Length: 270
Length: 66
Ligand SMILES: [Zn+2]
Image 1 (cartoon, chains in turn orange, blue):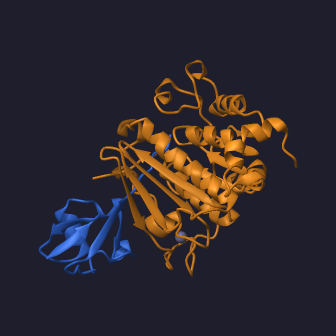
Image 2: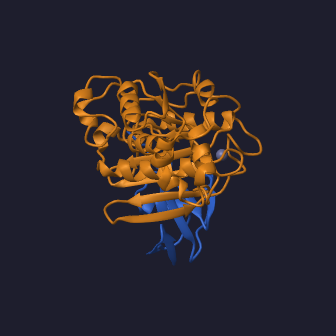
Image 3: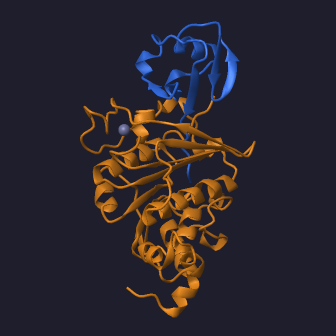
């Protein structure tokens, strides 16, 4: 694969970086990155990955754009209200960079379709809003052996971490199971400061690009928590849990399942 | 005695992790807890005694993303 003159110009600020260069830019051009959720976190991730020249971006989302989304989901514009998010997202990605191929999955992620979809990608980005899906993505990445960049946002707080299955701590190593549905607020009730999606989503995109390029130190075995009120990051070291039901020594989860009610809770905080 | 919770020193009269959660009115099901960088199983919260100087991390679920 050779770049055209135009592509060399477009990606020149990448190519100038010794850690990227023409070789790294080709890796980016061959990369396939899946965004589960084309919403708050998926929006900035999709736009920066598109700008970076990622070869294929997959978008999974069964929703249509709602007016309440526009405060933070910058992939979608006012005229997109009522249109499928995957379609709106594909248009923005390709308007920004026609080099990028976009695969649309206008469906919910389930135990039935997850592994088949994940198999076609190199990195998975979690941009979903419920625990059932977050655990499902974690488990599917384990079974499909795909690196995962996990993210979450709520009110003024955000979190991001990278999970390399069988090598670093997984979501279940830390949290085991979804919280009991009765104890969690729904995302609609909870609220979120819109820019937080941009902060966490772009860190997720950074992690995905680093994984593709094989450079730097991934955000593995660390949870990076961000508090927008204080403009403060906090890093919490985590370790693989030998008793993890998924990736531990004696796993009890041996196949994918939908863990909990997908319409239950968004997040909890005392 | 004193323990560090999420980097902040706090006084605690002593007891188990569960006692500490109760004192702070935190539902055990809503939090993952690390003591001195090691995860504590939820089933062991009531039997894990805290020591002076223990460093605790309370990790709350963060589920949003859309
Ligand atoms: Zn695990």
